Image (cartoon, rainbow, N blue to C red; front, top):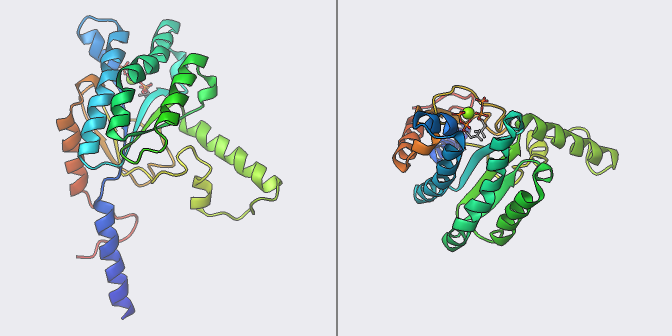
Length: 250
Ligand code: IPE
Ligand code: IPE
Ligand code: MG
């Protein structure tokens, strides 16, 4: 009886694990894409920003519930002032052009990262997008901006330590309790992580949340990442055997 029960649980879990609820993408290769066309790097960032809309729509149509896009890392401040300034103005271009459509489509915007360190106008636009869409129940479209996963984990540890100090929580917590201090607190872990432009690294993205994610590295630069490429990645995901350290029962 108990063996039967265990098998039933395993079969039930594997059905759920097949579902690609949360896709995270490292949108890389804008600069090289532009350079290959004899254009400045910023031209790649502009086309890349428009592609966010295309891929968000495609993700929503594929039944993905959470799409989490890496737009600017805590390390990207090392770039030229001109490039950083350009990227910091993109949210206002992007949401000015697409926010109404996103609201109509029912998307809920979320932000990951330390927004307080962004230029005031950039932060205002991002806060506004979150506020305007907070009751929406469609695609959760998260933008990671001034985001770094190591920083996120340190900030979580600081907040947890403070709660311990204040007597709000004990010293022995579960992984789930710790995860509730992360910037992704009310989101499921990542099922599929995609990086564009052929680079094979994680670059400080969602280190905790990708613990058991399936990984796809595609050669296309972000501006060339089409709905078809996304679909192929999700199809690949469907063929994977997610074991979570367990054993597959046939
Ligand atoms: C990704 O494209 C966008 C950001 C990191 C802001 P890149 O700007 O990194 O483009 P490459 O990798 O230099 O081609
Ligand atoms: C990662 O890309 C960050 C974003 C896509 C926003 P980078 O281009 O900054 O990563 P590295 O420097 O190649 O690792
Ligand atoms: Mg890059």
